[in-house]
Length: 640
Image 1: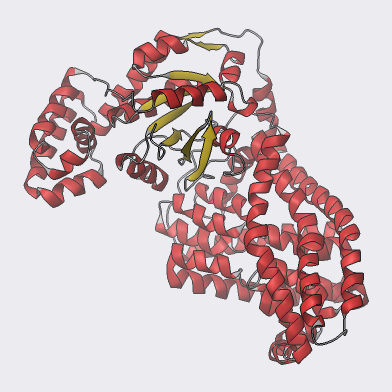
Image 2: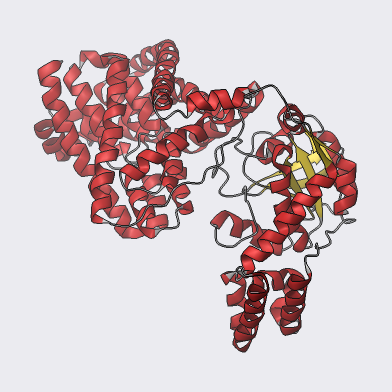
């Protein structure tokens, strides 16, 4: 076998493709039920049975169209023949629908193998599939797995390695009218260079479907053929009374259904309403669903706070005593103290809150609750004038704003994408959550932290409503696949948590460490007083905070975690109550929650939306932070 062999996993969202990837590749990719998680593909070298190959997890897609970014990336990858073998992962519970993608992969004539995943769930639903019969029907290797439990995974990759270089899909045939027009288009384009780069039949079908990506390619080489291809499309439409794309899609659907009927046996269960239906009746109820959502969110915060504060109290103390011991020991002490404070910041302040938060979010995602929460929130999105797909970036934003901003790509309308990009940076990410829990929840109480999240949601609603009135337009609904409830394994939850923690350990912690060292050196050289002086009109006069917090707000732009860590460092103690009043704690947290996004978010925002969106976002965040922090100062003075 070629040492550079590549096995690519292709499948629809929620088919268990990323779970299968993780079962072999380890901590290399995120797994979950939430659509849009794997926007870009993941890859890992894998050694199996003494053979090393490259395993690639491509984005979850429903078809080989070029309209959606994820589908276009996958199609381009496959067209470039980068994969030695494509493993089409199919959710066995939705096999009839999933086979439509299989047929499109067969049209592309790639080296193909089929993996029927989640066969245990299918059988539980009364769907029994004859894998050997399906293999004969397709003329392709077919294997069955339960990736979440590791069943059949070894056998799958063992056979994949055996069939490398020995299997290639043969394109399916359709009805007479479709075949006539396919032949018509083939005769028109067979001499073109672009036809030599792709399977002729696949390219002809794409042209008949009116795929703009392929029509442009042909038009660039032979513009005179455009009208002749259009004539073939019109002829097919007249023969069936529907658009060519609908006709060809219907042919695939019919063939997929016939395949399913020939190889599967469905046993009707007579046990009344299923447990999933009963659960969904409660979870997605138009009234109780929102009550449950509020309790889930409150429980998430409380669990994160109690676990985080328990760990933080036990980890931060020794570091505090150690840094005080080295304070003022000589010219080298700023470096040592900075290193200690940087390590303490990550281990004793951020991680205690970040680990339980990410673990609980992974649990909600893998159980299947997050897509249902997105379904509930879709209605609220329309009431404030936003696209239903805005739900996905908003939910992702509670983990990290960077992938949330990137997830806005799935929104087709420029108007809705613009509004989503403006609002998503207002959502408190896990880094800002560590600030909220580490200060407001710890010193003012968990209910104050919950209140801040409620205020944040209200602000999002009001600002979204007002912005949508200035940017008028229709907001289409969200078609969101609701996956079955699943019982995640501790192994998969830990892998997902570790995958997300890696970003903090690799990218954020070194910045925190460097920032702590720089702050100690600036303090030693008294440069921090200059920065604090420049910020004093904001911090002292407007917000009523000590001048020393100015430098923390400055460095907090680089990473939001730095704001919390460097606050302890700038004030010289881990016991904030000795230095800040309850009102000052409230004001500081409110300002940090809303002010300028971190530098990573700004960079991604510039790339995704351009300079106008970026500056508008910075202006919006800064204005809201100032107004709400001043309002918090008034509330604190009256209540606290």
